[in-house]
Image (cartoon, rainbow, N blue to C red):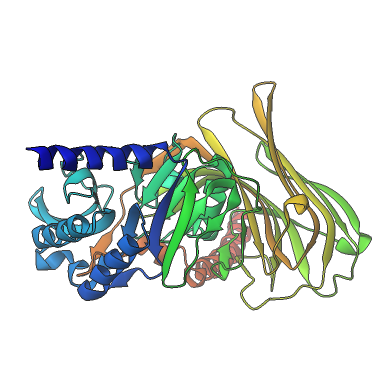
Length: 451
């Protein structure tokens, strides 16, 4: 009896010690998948590094929902969490029967140090599916005094979230380049100033991506998520961005001090750009967009965007910046300002460059007045700038559209939407429309002559 009492006392003291500290250790893995043995080794390594919570990539044998091994996966990961006394977050796929057809269910499960499932967050891979999925909790409370929100990657874009600490697991392919992880993850963590532990990296609020290690990353995070500022700059991005719906004004940066206002409907962006080096043959444009964009998986989101863009080619359909690494342009100052809705909205700075920025080179401010939220992003003494601006969300315009989806064994999706909106199809439609206009004109002249 005395031995049991001592054990309980020690356990409580350890818990109190963890709760009294102001930090905790989080771990993740740079790869999106691993073998079962490799995943087991990762959990063991995390335990040796005193990691409190680990976001685990999906073991290879559990990546396919067609194998009906969901229960086996839960047992394996539960045992790993229990044996190593660590919180483990894992993303699993499950095949279920829904409305007389099979649907793929994505699940984020959280296991505590005893191997018990303390949170289950589930949703269909197809957002239009009407499956009844059971979600226990989208938060969990740890023995080290932190309450975590449980998310899937797209939730950062689709939801207006509150909290200081989040874990994110799962795969997601955004069709909007600036929303690609980890670029947007870094910007989201910066704007909200919260901790984000994900399979795409660990982000410490305004301090940005953090942690040490290559394959296995360990980071120490402040529980309150309060950090000094570090510009959320991204050095990689998808090469091509669809600009067919944007309003873009080419900027003549040879003047070295340019002020321009670009409007898309009632939404306007004010640009002030000062340079001190030769632009040469490079093409920069000031862009504005307001409307609904297809985000992926049937999701359509309300967006408002202002951006200074570098384009390697014309602005007609797309902006290809993939082959440009050095612009040789020094931006003494870039300032972009726009007004947004004060509610049901969120704004994020977007910076794509091959150079880093110091704290003094970057500002992102928001102030509320006259029932609007005026947001300004500024850059000083920047070089090799490829994309700079504000990405805004208007949650009131979001909707889920019907999309034709084909699922393979791994639950990946291929959408007809992507084909219809490809450059080749759009160019063909333009070609047909031009020919039709000529034909209509000729027929009209003939009819008028006959009258």
